[in-house]
Length: 329
Image (tube, rainbow, N blue to C red; front, side, top):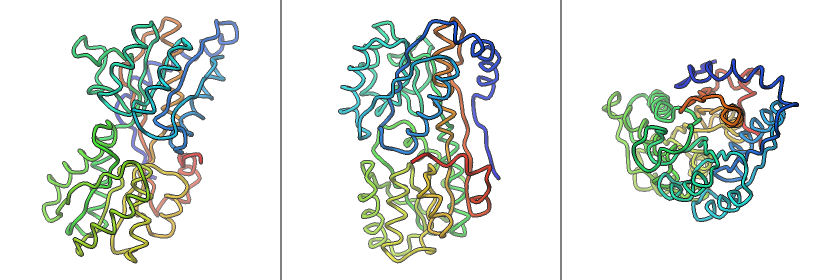
């Protein structure tokens, strides 16, 4: 099993000792309310994140409110955020759906005295509490190292296609911090390490698996030497895999996926998907609530916490230790 723990390990180590006694005292402490606003409510990634957040809330005696929109879109997320601010929770955990469009709405929370922690995605450049820029006011950013994840995806795809041929990235929309970084890491690794692989133009699918499937077939029609695709998030990967199957190119066009719901894992078992990079969303949620609680009880928290990921492929897909990282549906 290839399990990589990324940036922020020191942050996790620093937080754990102070939380242990607070968990023991939680029943006698004031009851705080923490709101978790996901990127969208229907994604297995965020469902799993909420499960981890609830586990921390139960341990710490925190009331957790999970409220979000049904699609990954700042237009629908901002009204949810405004409604949450009006309820005046003690802290907000949020996966911002845009690096710039959520800055001012989140500033309203900060100005109202509500601490903000971003999970999975970030605003600005994701570097907080520096005193510079207009988006450094969140207390912490808790997530995977998405640039490194993109690099690992590139190496896996290059290995699957023998180091030559045409590939492309199936992505969501520009301006989403996590998927932007995964694409960045993927393209950087391809350019630096695999000169015989041509990276075609990125296809943006607006977080729609059907769009991603149609785009795969269109790219293949224009580029009959297409050998691989990197799905930069859950719906991109599912759609790209479906497109490969619909084009009758299973085993010829190779697929590497970011995120690991059961459907992607099933595709690894059938050979339609070569590898999935499973984030640890339950851990992100757990540390989100734990960090909010620590701050509210006077404990300094790290400005960045990395939660790592687990690489799933045919060699370990049936390992029970890996199964715990498959996302809840």
